[in-house]
Image 1 (cartoon, one colour):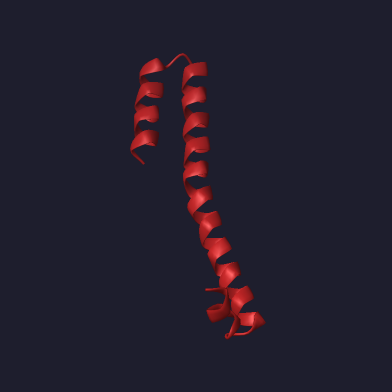
Image 2: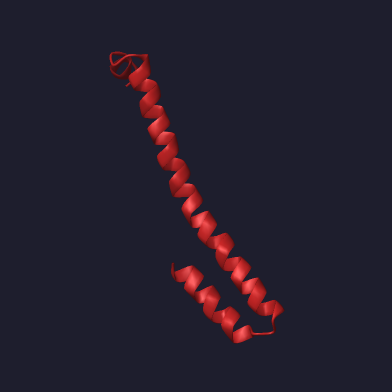
Length: 64
């Protein structure tokens, strides 16, 4: 595979790696940010003594 990619040149290979890295970062960060936002909302609901709202928010976060 390395010999096949080497025929394209350095810039094409670097661009391909950059695209793959960016896609990987987006696929990793999207669920992470949803999880952090959900946990923040659940913690706020628990701090406000609203356990039913916290339960609902946690379910919605898991479903998303």
